[in-house]
Amino acid sequence: MRRRVVCLGLLFLTTPSLFGWGREGHRLIAQIAAQHLNAKARAEVHKLLAGGTLESIASWADEVRPQRRETSTWHFIDIPLDIPRGDWKPYCPKTGCVLAMIPEMESRLRNRNLAQRDRAEALKFLVHLVSDMHQPLHVGEKHDRGGNDVRVLFFSKASNLHSTWDSGILDRAESQNAGLKAALGRKAGFFERRRLAKGTVEDWAWQSRDVARDVVYGLLPEGRPASLGDQYFTKAVPATELQLRRAGVRLGRVLNETLGQ
Ligand SMILES: [Zn+2]
Image 1 (cartoon, rainbow, N blue to C red):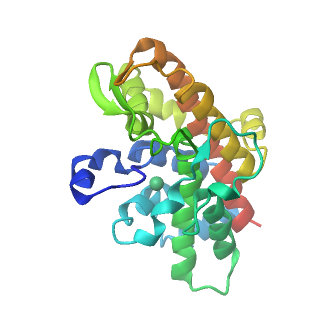
Image 2 (cartoon, rainbow, N blue to C red):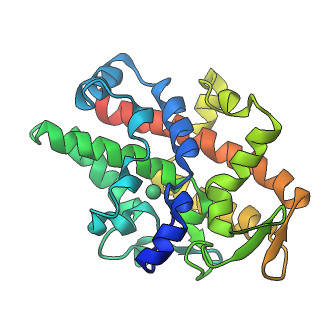
């Protein structure tokens, strides 16, 4: 999603980049997660969403942002690329950030004294925020509004770095390989699941920051607009795919831990 919208005119002009990973990325992550839910978590999701699916609500948090201005900082955290892993709290504003809101939504979702409507909303935020956190530019950045200010030519088409990582890379990869999204949305096998689901929410954020440092910016050519072609794309595709798989498997784990026990 476009993280900080400066004015409504800009919002209007850049609507396609509003939706985080892009709607497709969020949908894929939710699709992967849904296949990993245990029976109890699946029943809880079904009840809280009144029969709706995780996929159907995966982009809801982006859609309500214009009406819910207080939620706008929840989708990301700006961690510098060059600091060691450790304390992220200095980078989390008082209005909240993705690393503060994920545990908050987990605890609301666990709290069965809350109204069903509030727990349903917590579920929608949780699904979206775990997903957003795996878009590297929602965690790491270089004082450029998460890459929104970095002009690029992605295969000669004018764009910005954030939007390229939200959807440009995935869309182009899909256009070259029609089965890609179906393959990306598949259920993980035992070993992949065990490997990807390890760690804590904080570990996952630092890992996402490292992908921003090593791939998103690390391989970015000098010069603006940065000219991104095959050389960048061939490295960006596997990084994107891995972040989507990680997000899906981990979201499944988070939901099982909050709703399936
Ligand atoms: Zn978002």
